[in-house]
Image 1 (cartoon, rainbow, N blue to C red):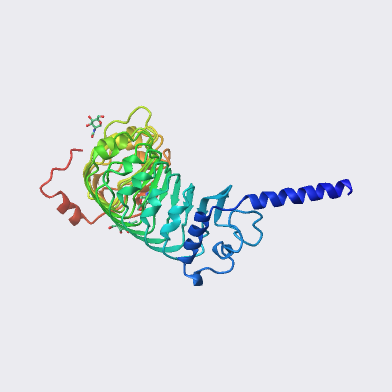
Image 2: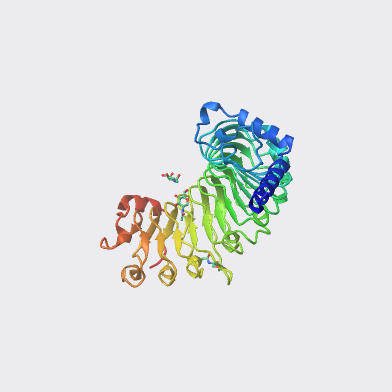
Length: 384
Ligand SMILES: *[C@@H]1O[C@H](CO)[C@@H](O)[C@H](O)[C@H]1NC(C)=O
Ligand SMILES: *[C@@H]1O[C@H](CO)[C@@H](O)[C@H](O)[C@H]1NC(C)=O
Ligand SMILES: *[C@@H]1O[C@H](CO)[C@@H](O)[C@H](O)[C@H]1NC(C)=O
C-alpha cells in the first residue's frame, strides 16, 4: 500500500469510528419524534427544519447533509438546543419535551403552537433560555416554574396566557435577567420579582393593583421597567424612580392617579420616563428637572394642572418633552422657543396662553376656554 492510501484508509476508519460513536440517546430520539408528530404535517413544508427531521438517520450524528439540517443542536449524544425556525408550525407542544433533560435552550418563537405549555417543561433542570414568544399558548404560568433554577431568559410574549402570576415563585429564579410576558391576558397584581432581573416587560396585559414596594425590593440590576397598557392604579411612588440601575420606565396607559418624585440618587441613570395616558392629577413634578441623565419625559394625556415648571428649561439633557393633553395654564417658559435648547415634543391641548404657533411644540392647538374654565372651577389657580 502506498503512503497516501494508508492515510486515506486511516482517515476513513477514523471518521466511521467517530460517526458510529455518536448515537443519540434513545429517550431524546423518542422526544424529538413525539415533538414532530404533534405538529400538523400540512404546516411542515419542504424548506423547513422540521421537514429535514428524518428519523431514518441519527439526529446527533454528523454529517447533517440531508437530515436534521437545523432546529436542534447536540452536545455529544444529547440534544442541548431546540431552536425551531419561524415556519408557522401549528400544533401543541409534546409533553415529552421534558425527556430532553440536557436542554439549555428552547426557542419556538414565531410559530403557531397552541394549547397549554406542558407542565413537564418546568422540570428541565438545565434550561437557561425559554423563548416561546409569538405563538398562541394559553393557560396559566404554574408555580412549578420555580424549578427552572438556571433560567436566565424567559420570553412568552405575544401569546394568550391568562390568570395571575404565581405569587411566590418568580423570586426563586435567581439567575433570571430577562422576563418578557408582554401581550398576554394576565390578570392580578405584580408579584415579588426575581432579584437579578435586568429587563422586565409585562406590557399589554390586564394586571391590576398598586405598585408595591415589596415586589421590587432587592432589585439592584433592573434597567428597564415596561408595564404600559395594564390596569395598574394608585400613586406612582417615588421609589420607582430611585431603583438603583433604572434607565427606562414606561407606565403609560394605566390608571394611575397621582405621582411622587423625589430628588434623584447621585448615580441616577434614568434616561426615559413615559407616564402618558393615565389619570394623574396634581402639578407636573419639578424634581424630574434634576435627574442628571433624563432625556425623554412624557406626561401627556393626564389631568395635570398649574404651570409648566420653569426648571424644565434648565436641564441640559432633556430633549423630548410631551406635556400635551393636560390642563396646564399660564405662559409656557420662553426658553423653550429661544432656539438654545433644542427640544421636541408637545405642549398642545392644554390651557396655555400664547403658545407660539411658529414652534413645533405648539402645533396642536390649546383647549377651548370653556373646558379650561370648567376644569378649574372651584379650584384655585396657582399665583403668577
Ligand atoms: C411606552 O409604551 C407605549 C404603549 O405601549 C408606547 O406607545 C410608547 O411609545 C412607549 N414610550 C416610550 C418612551 O418608549
Ligand atoms: C393608550 O390609551 C389611549 C387613550 O385611551 C389610546 O388612544 C391609545 O391607543 C392607547 N395606546 C396604546 C398603545 O394602547
Ligand atoms: C422633591 O424631592 C424632595 C426630597 O427628595 C421632596 O422633599 C420634595 O417634596 C420634592 N418636591 C416635590 C414638588 O415633590
